[in-house]
Image 1 (tube, rainbow, N blue to C red):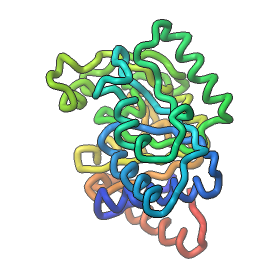
Image 2 (image 1 turned 180 degrees about the vertical axis):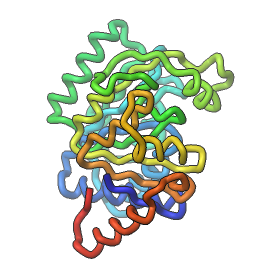
Image 3 (image 1 turned 120 degrees about the vertical axis):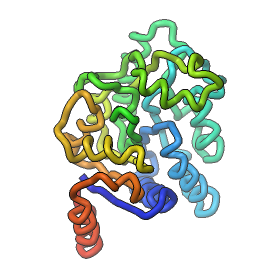
Length: 262
């Protein structure tokens, strides 16, 4: 696991975008897994800049989003489809037909989830997955207690998640109680992962996720099983880590040998 610590949120976002750019240049038809929330916004802004100012093309890219609120139509301003269109897709040369977000209005949820997994398989699998971490340690909407082998499915949201997301809605009562999410097992099958974390509020849960024991109560801890994870942090998010000196040493070693060390 690579842990890259930068002074500010803007700096960590640019570092993460540089990795996406590198992978896209290596494979123009990259299959990207994407996340929503406030944390990846800096990454998305930088990708838009790279496209508009440096001609980074996304025309052959295919995407799969992690999750979606169940019960929200794609046109709802708090739906994750609306979020992705507004904050990324509308500003790139990507073909919207190649962008997939779970259907929050699916009539047959189980059939939809099976089809979503099959669509990922048919694409050849996700090359690079962007993740954030929830206040309770979740990735996607894999709440505490989620099986570490779980697949795409309907889940009930934890009270902490509802409270955390209430700021995006007019009232807490408006926050959906259910969501469709990729499972932990689904995420662990991707080829490479970017985990983005910023702010002191996430410092303790991040430290437990990447330096503590693997547990279903913190689904992000399952990333310790993955062979290619790059964690991008600002200094406040890194404040509870115990091995900062080692992470900085590893990054310096990468520069010397000219390759990434996982």
